[in-house]
Image (cartoon, rainbow, N blue to C red; front, side):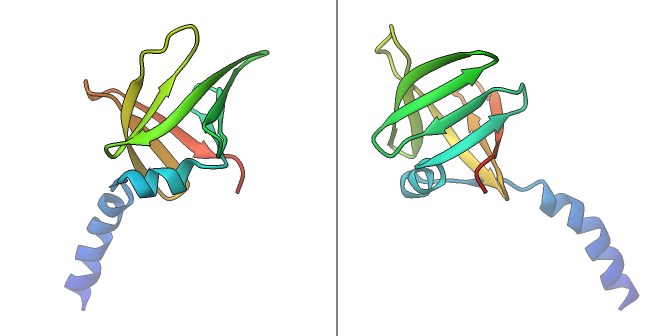
Length: 111
């Protein structure tokens, strides 16, 4: 029993670090109608009609978002070139991963 407790004690922090990759359906559920606050203090809202609002300080920017091929995609005027990211979840946190491995982490603000 003592050995089992010791093993569990070492496993628990590792389990807390696990991120779950989301497929298209799960990304849609995770983002639609939700708001995220990012580590740098910016915020983003994801509206069901495909609009997204990004707020940084006193400024704000409207863009478009959608889900395709198990990725979150968006465009931000004046560009119509989409940027797409893999999405993973861990509890109340979401992280977006670009093709180069960079990540952006956000936490739900609307819980």
